[in-house]
Length: 442
Image (cartoon, rainbow, N blue to C red):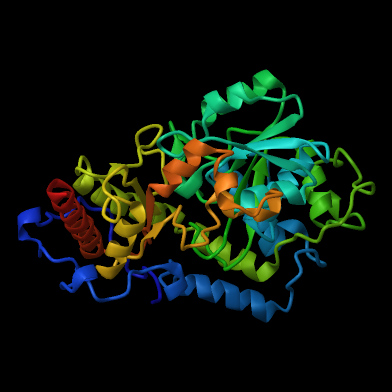
């Protein structure tokens, strides 16, 4: 697939068949599946890349100038221009393009001066990159419970606060905004920096303000399934010039190159007392991202169109609990997440529900499945624990463990068509109806 070269404008959801029109027998049990074509995802080539983006990358390749620091002034390099464009998009003073979202998170913590060995609070539901970045920064993750909508639980954080916690990392997981306004106020009350892991939420907003701009720094990824995609990469944004200067120096701006990031004056530090970690972005990736950035609003509209289509059609469906945003529209829309609470053994669990959806032709995962080593499940982060027993690890965050065990995750590519969305709606209704009829009869 070559992406949405002729992507449709956002449109209202199309009518969807009601449950009485659907086949009764699940594909899992030998019935006809809802769809037979592969569900579009980035790893199958369903990426939002246009010819103009490819041309930009090729021009960078043909320039033979791949390193971000060369003879040109910064405003003539791809990385420098990309950072300037990010500052305009987010309305921040500084932006730094780096090698990954994990690198951006670690640099944000180190740039904020969080002392090595400190605890950094982060939610128990996140991608493994969040605790990994904390470890990379020389700190220790302090995991916090999440609420029913899988957001970091401020009440649990307040209740278990310890003086060793020297930063809070809030995560806008699966593109849904956390209650970052309340968490930012709490971090200020505790006198610690708030770092936003907006890695999976590039372009999403809360109350008209872009995620990543609420804390001391925001970190983003440009890996293959993100709103901007160059295969690998990331960036951080901040208004704090000292944090920015430290992050630049740590990323690998050696031999005076730090000054290039401060064209209107001297940087607030030399960086000579900081290690060089070589976490820079290269010119080829930056060229591709600059071209993609021009179409980011179009892609965001497609994410919202698809998510609105699916969530509206499945709102109130008995037997599932669709994840709710913290405020209207406060999500990216790149995933449809719901819980399958309760139910009889074998039919009521989210693992069965996800298997049934896959049989219907829809990519779906139960985040807390025992037979799937999903790195979004905290009990699979064995590097954090002395125990290798998942049960013992789950007991450290019992509420989060229960919620993740009930959670089904379906990726929503911006390349989905309304017909694809209809297939997802039909499949969820079909599986939910089969489950309900079995539960009634049990």
